[in-house]
Amino acid sequence: MHLKIPRLKKAEAAKLRLSQKSFPVEHYTGPKNAKPPALPEVAQSRADSKLLSVSLANAQSKDAAYFSQLHSDQPLEWSGFNARQDRAQVDVHRPKTLCMYGPLIDSPPSHPDTVVTTMDYLKRTLTSLGMLHVHLTVDMQLHIVACLIKWNDPTRWKSVILRPGMMHTLMSLIRDRSVKWDRSVLYMMHTLMSFLGTIVHCHEMYWC
Image 1 (cartoon, rainbow, N blue to C red):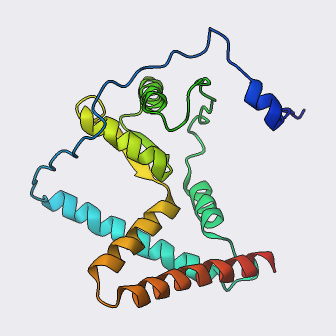
Image 2: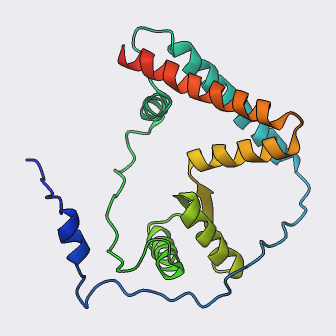
């Protein structure tokens, strides 16, 4: 049995209005600008240092395995490779993950009210499922708003970890390096072209 979800046309979606029973929107009342809180200086313990060494060794081993399989008869792109690694390491006795769609919010996506409502809903929902931390990955436009909300009330959002999308992370890294390093333009172009060349090479190998 296949579930078929009909798509709305743009004209229909523009006229769509949610009922009065839609999800209540929390209003953000903080300032428009908030500075990030100062990070406490904590000395790294021996246990943390050991865990970091193990994590780095595992990452290097996975990177080597990924690049090696690119020369095989059936190479996988990065996401597919990691998915296969996860399936091989998963515990078959664990229960299935509960996936669900959240309620619709009748508000612009990048509005602070929408973002704070979403963050609160995710925090309450995932905490009820037993998660200690909430990892929220969004694009840069929403990431900036989410950071503003978290910085305004660090205690409330202490368990919410914000992460920008990978593309925006790469763009921010290139921009940061181009500002701080000499011959910035040449280095930025070299880094970007090397990255794009790797993507094209993997894409060609994947589809050949």
